[in-house]
Length: 348
Image (cartoon, rainbow, N blue to C red; front, side, top):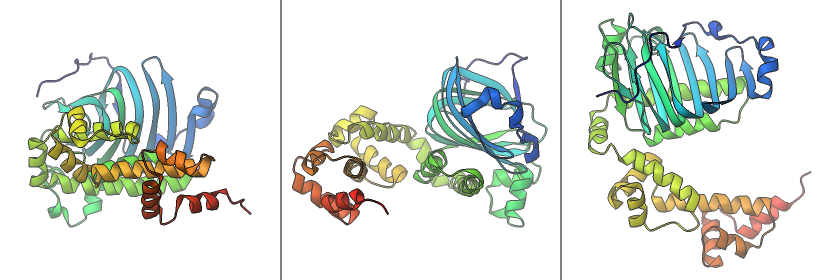
């Protein structure tokens, strides 16, 4: 696979991943004046930063889970491709992305695409030279780094349950970087969104991210070892991207969505591929997804405003208020008027 981004100059910046969590301890007193409200410290080696620079804007979070086990979540826009040398040998990398582009270019192997939506697994054996890593566009991803010793500890005496490539990695038999791109499954997408939408703070946030990181590792290794999943990626590599594009389109047009044929044409899929993809990736049909969007908006309008229920019905896409009331009752187990009365009651 030819590389899609320019090679780095030899004197470009180098990011080295260290093993010890304590190496990432942040002395906020040195940066408090500059960072101000753009920095949130959750723990000794766990922080979130909001950036607004000439070539990029957005936020990222770094979380040191254990020695040799790190998670970073990023939701940023790179106005121009951002590239660095990246040094993290003797480790497994797991990259989940629902948007954005980029690539990982090992010194000893072919480029590995980061074009979303995708799950990417990269195994870097000890002794490898720094890779080149590039991110571009509006990126939303989670990146996990798991050192070989941590993977060995997690699996204990059950390394035989791992995919062959990881068994070779643990046994010191892997001589060059190995990478594989998988479909972004529905389970993976939910993990990614859970990380990005987590509202917890402090130690609770750390515990939540640790649980999600372990879930992502399990999901990724299972997908890595399933040949059926790999064949699906080869035969329908455009389906995940089309489904996520349709998801965004429906989020903006749920009150008046197009028919399935027009939606499929809008995102470059056949009707059958669109329907199958929604089931596989999002775990529900297109109709169910639109219904959930309508109900979520209707609940917000009932709870936060005083518009008549008939007006809310029209606003979320129902031509008949009676149909709206029936759908709302089925979804929430209560009528719109009852929900409004409950949410409007003064709190004691």
